[in-house]
Image (cartoon, rainbow, N blue to C red; front, side, top):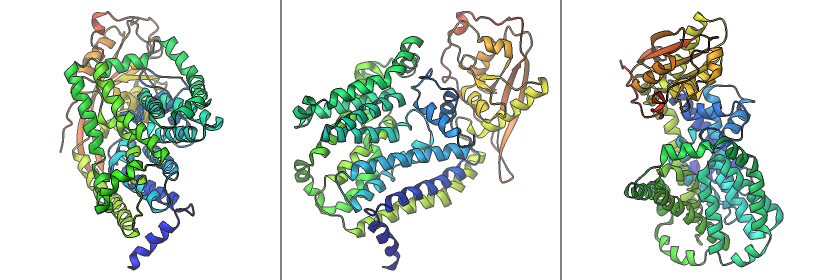
Amino acid sequence: MRWRQPFLRLLDGIEAGWAIPLLLAGFVAVWMAFLVIAYLVGDLHSDVLEAWTFGRSFEWGSAKHPPLMGWIAHAWTSVFPLTDWSFQLLALVNSTLALWFVDLISRRFVTGDKRIIVLLLLMLPPTYQFFAQRFNANAVLLPVWPIATYCFLRSFETREVKWAVAAGATAALAMLGKYYSVFLIGSFVFAAICHPQRRAYFASPAPWISAGVGLVALGPHLHWLATTGAMPFTYALMEHGGKTFFAALNEAVLFVLEAALSLVLPACMWAAIAGRRLKMLPRDFRQMDPGLLLLFWVTVGTIVFPAIAAIVVGTHMPGVWASQGLFLFVILLVCTTSYPIDRFHTVNLIVIVASIALVAALIVAPVLAFYRNTHPLNEGRNFYRLSALELTRLWHSQMDVPLPIVGGEEGLALATAFYSPDHPLFEVELVCPKTNEFPKAAISRGWAALCFAGDGACLYRMARNISKAPRVVEIEFAVQSTLMGLPGAQQRVKAFIIPPSTEGMMSSMSAEDLKERRCKGGRRPVADER
């Protein structure tokens, strides 16, 4: 059929080197259109705003996470403007880089159509579009895990110094993205031990060079942890720990089930392509390439180790945390096969993936935008920018200096730091106080805060924070989303404006006042709808 000719020419260009970049460019273009249209009335997620906030200054860590996401956000915004589309583009570039690194692994074992099939199957689940749009400590691992896996594979195969150094450096980079990457590194060790060529690998300098390079690369961050009280570990234990044995066992089971559920669509599509040849799987598995066998054991480790850790440590383990490692399953699924794939099936898969993306961008996105205009996102993202701009206006009606510091409800505070023209500093002690000492900078420079009018927990914290202030301006206002002139949902927000104080009347809080430490436990208000 004539309509298949362009797709056949695309497949001819895989080994020529231009087809994969063209596919990835199309992926970015279509899903960028979706994100821009779908979130016309939905501001950036608080995770994205947090990544930017942590990256405003160069640090070796933050109160919640290792520093990589902040570093990337800082580097990105040194080139691109502080806008929604800029961070939407960052999310998709991050995903595209991940897919490119996946292809680096695939081309070690297959050529031609199978390379593009791996990428197309990965584009079916929402991992590289919707999971990735929240550019946070999880999404930043999407490209880091594949490149670390590729470098480890090359180091194991060649045992050359350059690949050993690369393996150690990329493993450290993964740890600087999120400590969850310890499961990837553990899986590397596990895979090397289980592999038939383990003696040759461990007898070479390669694993020891990788370990040394990784520790050196992590050195500054480890020093930061030692000198700052290991705040990310404290946060992780407080936020995710404390599960009973049976609750943790349930978490482990759900973790494996959710990871498996993420692969249902690619697996079903591959089953349709392979057809009766699926019965060849046992034979193909026995004849698996040594490199693929290494990846098999890495894959096992990335699923089993987190499940075991959830039970042993008693911690929360969401299945979505496995998303950055799902590429391993797809590579094994496609690259272990000994039979060729008819181009008829490859073209059909391209059409299916492209059709899903185009329908999402041209039909689903506009419908979602109009729906969200009257049915706001649960976290209040419809009102972030509007509230930030109104608070800035109220501050300047009282003061003739830029708004210096912001607190209150975490999402609103992060949004104000980002969307306000003054770009005030986000102060965690004005969001969720954890010490007995009130921030001195807030006393001397003044500060402001925002709470949703129905958020009792936030209002209670702010009442404690302002109780000793010599002067407080409290204003409640309403904001309303609009789309193409159509009025949407309304939300009432309460602003607190505290002018600079020279008397230092807010130097401390009582221990009783600090009993409520968690910021995310308060009930989220439901916006008024029209």
